[in-house]
Length: 169
Image (cartoon, rainbow, N blue to C red; front, side, top):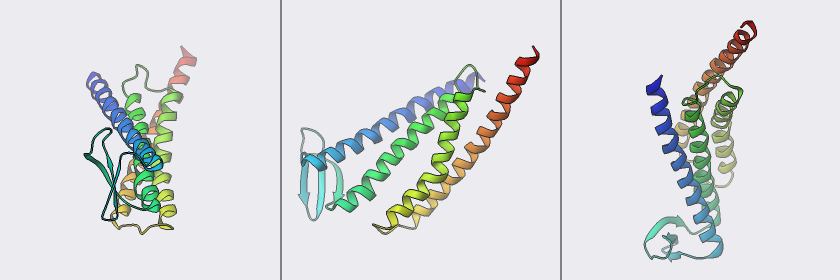
């Protein structure tokens, strides 16, 4: 179990950092677009530069629909994904695995992965065309969500057995 705790703690920090990077990138891109700072326009593209430099950081199409549906929604969506994934990894380095708080982390992760990609893709399809590769990503999130759903049910059963055991001792 010690190996599991070490690996999960490392993955927790990696995914938490990734979540932060996605969220900061989304906020920086949105603020740059809204305030019209750190922007360069070339050939119907908007280039968002690194702060205080002229070096390109993000290259986006120059329209609001693209910004919202092809940049902000995916970037903030994956920020949320990695944040929730870090909470799943956090579950596995706790001293006590079978707790209601851990089950809540697993439940949030599987609900978001089962429903959010499909809902966002359907909503986005009203505004921009959806590429076929997106359906593969939706299926991967669905499989990941179902897998964590099974883990959540195992944890729920473990919590139930643990509570029964506490009653008998």
